[in-house]
Image 1 (cartoon, rainbow, N blue to C red):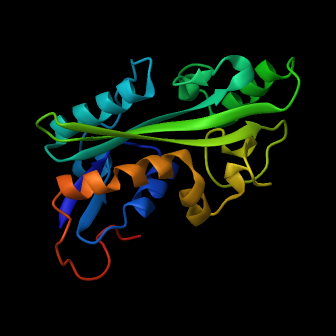
Image 2 (cartoon, rainbow, N blue to C red; image 1 turned 120 degrees about the horizontal axis):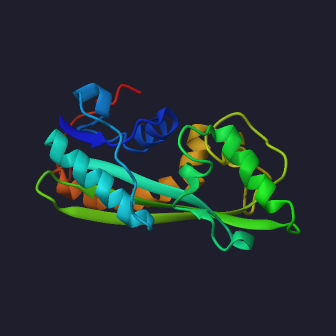
Length: 211
């Protein structure tokens, strides 16, 4: 079995990524499982910078190939904000619920619809410093009333374009067909399989993720 570190401590994100990486021969581990520090300061101004930084630092610390992502919500009427700083809106220690409230307060002076998109960049890094990147986008709009109890972050106020559902009203399987993170990881999968030697090998059935 081949191990891949998922450089995140977010339970919801880990669950989504593990489901997307249910690949024969692959075991997706998180920082707590191998005893390394999971928090890396996101000092970049771009999603790619932060994903690259998290993946590279964690790969060096763990000694194994590592996947990391950086994602954010871009609202058109706010000039693309909060963008890469989406998880930092309100400062350290601010809860997801408070971030959603702060965002809606910024939007109330502006007429609806509040068109927006979720964006994600994923990075795959080796301990030696090789890095591959892929990105994904999900279009939609912000709504004023929260709907749904699944997901995390801004999911309850993000209505997906072409549907009548917020991201928080989707099952894990549905979200992993439509989300920005799912699109980015699916784009990266062929490279990931090649890098980890998972192409053309008979591993039998199932994976080692335990999900």
